[in-house]
Length: 205
Picture 1 (spheres, rainbow, N blue to C red):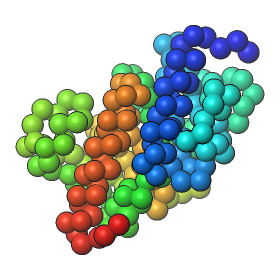
Picture 2: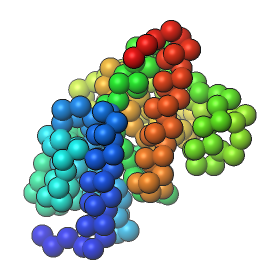
Picture 3: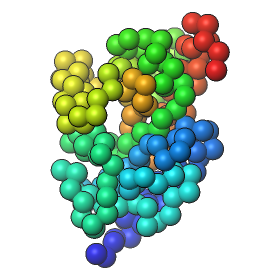
Picture 4: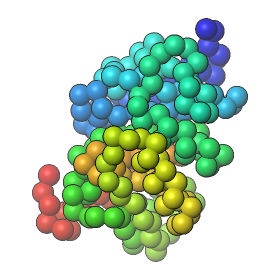
């Protein structure tokens, strides 16, 4: 197929994001997956099984809004977790899913949610303008049945409203934003705040 200029721009952004995230050791081995929504509603997505610190343009594929491959490449089994976010939030243009150590440790320390409040760095999140804020990061049990897991996330959002991220226990973190850059900012802030909580609770990493 013929890719658009917008696809190549998004692919380049995802490749750069992968290098940055890998430099933080947040995507060991071939873990994680990243995506960006294009103006026509299709989605650029990292293919399955590629090291995220060494991505090339051919490692980025194109899917539709229902997670169907449009170019014959193989998407991650977790692709529906990306598309469900895009369907729910029309303004969201990027979803990043690393397997960071701090998110995994947080999921061992807290059972259902991690509450982050009264941190200056909360102002890194879209719409927050004061440290006198509180965000909740829900934690879901890991599940190899991805549609079932996506359904649990949907039920949580139906009940509690929008959030900035969620953790899959023992697995990793999903966060999103209106651009790849904003999503990276959310990711970096979350990792710092998770580290604060871990140290407050006596966990050394």
